[in-house]
Image (cartoon, rainbow, N blue to C red):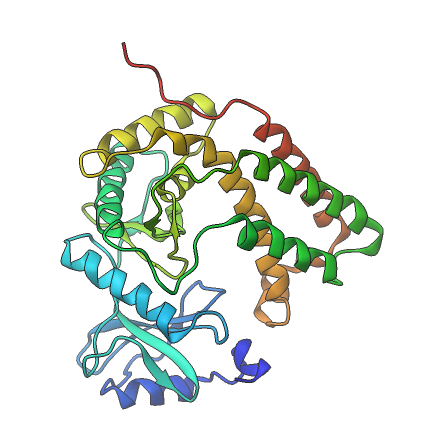
Length: 328
């Protein structure tokens, strides 16, 4: 696979149309690009006025086995009546190929935006996350990775050190802040949890609302602690987060027990996401879509802010972890 394929420069509308036609789908509406940076995702309508979404996976990221595990997990969840966008089968297969690209076709399932401050909606989501994890604990992923400090901290640190986009005059301070954050996270990281198959990226943007939650995008599915699928739903100050967490866990435990040891991983996981996300942007910088969408990454002020953000997260990691209100 060429570098141009990695950055999707060889993926053109005619190629997409041809790939779909090979599966018996005639595009009648044209292709509407959806908001996705890692992959290329398009919505369209066929000649029978049925609406679909086609997703072309970025080459060199996931293997066929790893994508297959994502699809299998989605289909298991659908079988368990979890509302989720799962890939469609064509001739018995969900993972399709065309000119070196892996792709999949999904039904187009619309919905409203999930309301991140709505406790009633949060309760619904907590209940379904319990069901997702009930399915996820049946077996681990064999090919997809585990959430680990190696992938989320150590490897990104190497990207920071080598990447020329970070201004030379600011690099030493930024790397020092990164090292202190890695040290703080490593000191608090533990494995006193049951490792489950997870959604992996369960932020409010990956939940739609249509008479209940609809989960989308299992692209970052991994093995890891249950709290990974819960903490990104929290927002506001500590008191608000505690109320939200209590709402989610009470609903969650209708289907799955929750291990309170995992609460101490919320801020380490937040820090790991910060570091991993920033390294992801740098790894994708050769894709023309990234400089267009994230131009501030080339500005010195951005890296000063990131140094300050990492330093602040070290301070947060020194505070007591979020806890549930004691029950008497």
